[in-house]
View 1 (cartoon, rainbow, N blue to C red):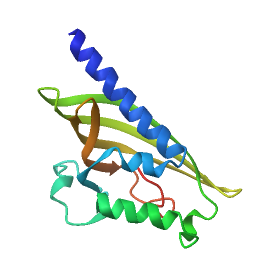
View 2: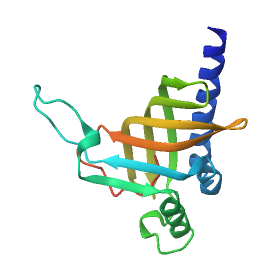
View 3: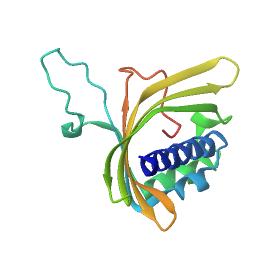
View 4: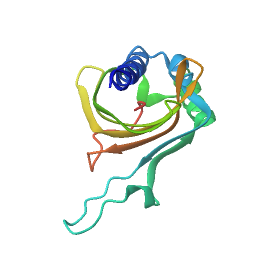
Length: 167
């Protein structure tokens, strides 16, 4: 039981550290948290009837489907003045909650579920909230964890503004 609690705390701290990096606009540090073959995916949100099963992994439409090189390109674009949605840069605050280790493969590979709220403020009067859940596959490399897969499921059906922030 003690090892389970220690592992859970380690994963919590990893996800809190990630949120801190993003809130500080340390995108290089954030990108270092991903494996070279990472997948970063956010499907569209569907409203379903009560009797329809939720199966977002089978959806064809997505808002984001990136790999690490593409995430790096997004970061490089943010460093230019061409990222108009981020001029001036947004202020953000990320809250990560309800962290659960759903699958554990010998403490080397984990499936981690979490919920998030992201507050984004731009200029003087533009404020947005993004709420949802994530499914992360984390792999251990030595004494560090890396994200090899992230699936993001927003609760909003209509986004308040263009997505210009990382989840």
